[in-house]
Length: 278
Image: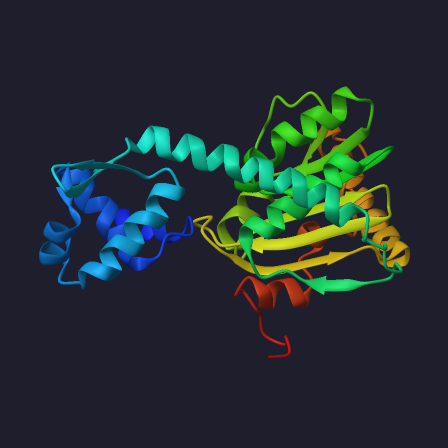
């Protein structure tokens, strides 16, 4: 299990230099301190300390005070600092959105991209859900469903037709179908499946690690052809699940992936039988 990041590491992720993080944390522990005192504590040249203090002052992280011919610094409370950084980020983000929108030229469709970052995968999935105008189909294990449910419910409220495969009962307002052999899938599938198909125009497909911390496989495409094929296959699985739940179909299990357990699935889930190709 990953260890908790240190205070210095969290500040570095917000754009603070190594020396700035060390100074701010030192001042959180004891304020005020002089630049000379900080240079002794941290083992850095006074000139470097004063330069870093000036940068921290501009970032709103410290307050500088001159008295008796010496300059001392005090740390701004973390809540106040983080609120200021948040407002600054939002203002910069909005300015960037306005500036970039004027130069962005949409590229042609029929693209297929790999996604390797988990946050990027979920951001793309939420974008597809938010952009859908008519239909959304999904295949979501419990973890990804929990992560995306609020976005799906917003789409449902604005009138998008939604249907999806789930792997445990849910009280969602939109249409869901319990996957055939759901318990088997949860136990043997090599991760948490997450597929979203929007308007048969775009789709994201991903395999999230069982512990939800990383993306094992991820794809996004805006190819109408590939998206239509994903829509077609997923709609069939959803309908087969619904038929099985209603007890209709004269006992016919249908050609669904989990219902028929073809050789490729047996290899994927580690239950290959005699006669299967390795």
